[in-house]
Image (cartoon, rainbow, N blue to C red; front, side):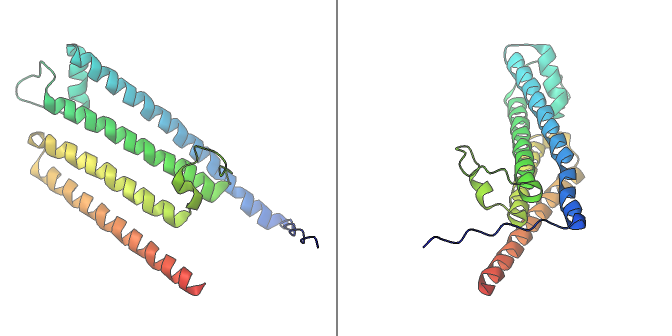
Length: 200
């Protein structure tokens, strides 16, 4: 006995079809984020080249690094020191983490709100993409933002002598707010998931 063929989806009426097609208006936004990703890649390599040049004694590259990381001393910096290297490396990690955040928004957002990518058979499919939805995406974005905030806070504390106490205090408070917000989002998601499973 042959199994029944799956019923084909009936075509949408004109107005619902038009409203549903409006999701493609988000496509330029994701393309814009890809362009922003390119800017971050360029910025990463500029900073990395400056770091390598400064390691080999270039004063011009060293001053460019000092300016970019906001490192200030009463005595002019004439050679690469451990603090500058640490701040530059943290800045590079910061760029990478923001880039990861962009990838999550671009890939996850497109998959969730625009169109399926059908990556199930692709060997490079991100593990999290197989079960991504708006709720999961929010939790992952909140976690990524906490990571970025942690890097910024660490950079500030390493270079604390060049910051006002109020700046240090406000950055710490903002980081705590990010932590609390992420916990609230994760807890709300857990409650909704538990409620959904209980209903089924």
